[in-house]
Length: 310
Figure 1: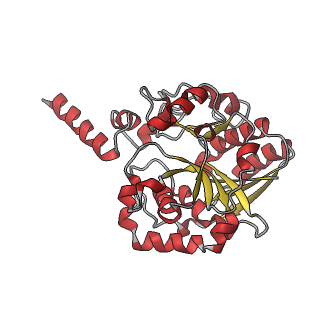
Figure 2: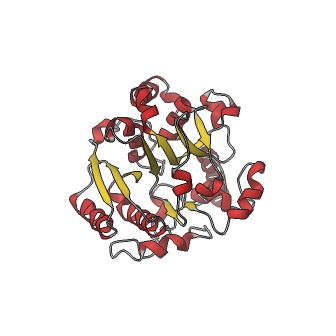
Figure 3: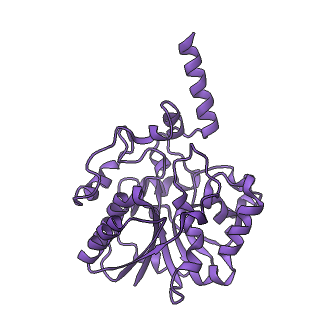
């Protein structure tokens, strides 16, 4: 039995559907889905339930009042929604008999069976995950760089371990006391509290968006592994602000998303021209795609606009 968790709102329901469809088609066997949601509509729940039922899997919805995360750190220019914080409540919300579960972002597509990953022995770890792209986040959060900063969009959780350490209450205390340190939302919170307690896994289990840039944005030690898995990853993670459903997304594997979403009558059928400009104006979004921080992207944007005025 594989326990899979996702955290969504109505806006991401169709993308969650594509993710689940790819999961079911590449992973035979028993699967139980736990959907953490911010007041998800009955329509969205019914669509997901019909999909899950059609593959004879199980699904449970866990509704969380939006007031619980309403005041968590989130800038108006940030592209994730507050639903990203829902994973901090997993140890308290899952049934007590669930000791292990895989948390999956909805901007992910499964291409291979994940049994080898799911069966990893994480008895002495809080989670199994993959090192994030090179960054200064460990230094920013104040923990040893040798502990490594992990990407939280695809993590195998030792739920029992997290319960035993009272993780959720510690996370709430961290948000309250260290709010000024939090830039990457719940991912920062998870890393701040769990660094040094992570089993790092091969990158094929979480092929990030930035690995497909030219040149790839990845630590040199992973280059051989990257070339072996670039064209046939086990898990594709469209982790940047430009998603496959955004018009202009340059990801070379963006069609993999539509291979699944178009099988759903309610799935995304074509890219949306509104895309990332709902949060970022061009060329800010382009600079972010190229690896700039939001602050640097906005500075470059201002320079371009100033030159145009002149």
